[in-house]
Image 1 (cartoon, helix red, strand yellow):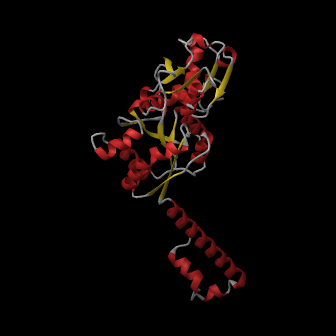
Image 2 (cartoon, rainbow, N blue to C red):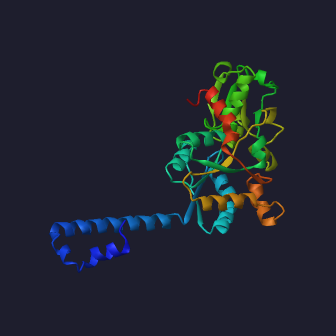
Image 3 (cartoon, rainbow, N blue to C red):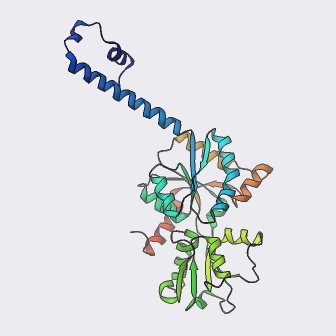
Length: 311
């Protein structure tokens, strides 16, 4: 990069007679260097301007309209805390979130435990999980059915079954891991295995008889019951997994550390006793946010390897 004095010398010329002997070729070369410097400066300014917007997304584990509804108050809160415009970037599937985070198209993403592990590997261990809900440290999944003959996991043999999305921690990976521990191999022991794509879709599958049983995360199940979108008298829980770590908010590894701290502090100071923040937290199904770290997801990484989902 040129110093200010060198830059002026290139644009305005030098009074040193020796510079005249450089000739036309050298002058053109100098102007070429100046053009490169101006171009680099323009790109730098452009990048800085782009960073005035915080690009946020989430794994599509629920309907797009629900994700937007949940995010709106949180986005407004983060704008206030960071002084930046916050833009929610919808994605088509779980893999798109991982790829967008890895390629710098996203700054912050709501990930499941397994999706975080995938992002960790895709970004060569640079993605940073910053916070999770207190509930995510003891997360569980619910096995559900509308079939009166299914009362335990053992009764799933020969039945049709629905997982959520293939990359879902709570809708696929960890339930599968616990099924294997119980001596059940879905591909061998179930009549048919389907993937609904989202937790609320799994409930719809079971309620409509498209699958005799299924599994989804406890948080979504509780919300569907509370809002009357599922009748627990028709679709019921017959088993619950042991607890495991799950969801978190993750930032790309090269995000400005000062911004990372602002985001972390913003989540950690959310207070359920503050009426405005309480509504935001209720939408996030969070009693409070707590710090998290990469080590919390080592068990999920091992479960994924055991299931043959990671090399």
